Image (cartoon, one colour):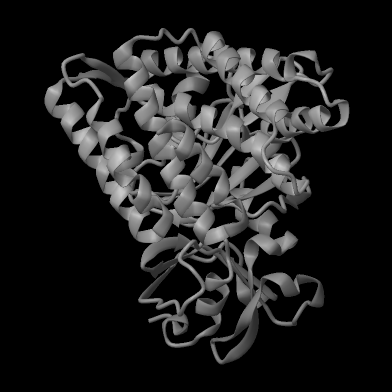
Length: 438
């Protein structure tokens, strides 16, 4: 049995991490599965993947050093005994030398332990001497840049193929130009630990680009269509890109059609998420009856085409490159069970995600500036919503509008729960959206 199940240091470290996502209360570690060593601690630095069961299963690669390192203090976990000798233990992803050891299985000619597999798509191998850079943004996973590759270490794990690998492998083999190509992945048995893809070095994050456009409105004090930083053309191109990706996903992954029973099941799931949101935030209860009515308006008599979708589509999952928009991170909502993230769904799920993200980008700027909503920002949101849907080729009908509205409401409720946990100052953004949608 691992000593981490009996000692508090690793539990305390997990509780502080954004990717752990289970609040700041006491963390009970019930099991730690230690994979084989990638480097031998007897040589002064031991590195291995450790799979930690603490409510859910988490990927916590650790490095064991004979001597403490002040420069690695952010990732310090505690001291541990190995073979009667004391080692200082760090989160290996915050240890540059250890990061290099974690990824060297992608290098030609490197032997790897029997319980870890480094899979590579044809033609790829990692350069032997590449330095690694840890991306500082805290999120649900941890990403590292090595040369021209970006390696994403999944933090929350589940048995079965990670949808980010599954979808991007299919699109890469198809030759999609709308994604950042997949290069390989790391797995242990039926659990995926990490994936590696092409790093878009010159790309601009869609979230940052959209917010810069909104800030230009504040500077110019003109309506969105008159501003030099107008984003509507980009929104239209982004809609076109998503339409192409959805088409490519239909070519490579399963599709189906929902009938009345399937639509009833969808409405049931939406109402369950509503109940969870009501329990999390008192203000949601005032909208509950109107939300249920909106869900009930989804027409079960009209078949709904369904397919694999992105599942967590927003501006932060897009990159603007010199060759156009790229869509990234096909993992779905990481907090949701794998069965939900791989379920076939309507493309309206992704459309709603981006519509909510455009609204978020605009109103997050007004919060940062300490301003109330203003007509210029509202105009920006309306203009970009229309442009995005036009670019996608969205066809409006009574039934399609009801379905898209239901997905938008569901996304806004998810946002209320998220902001209540992590950014209470922003919770007014989705609450105001519920007012508009209902």
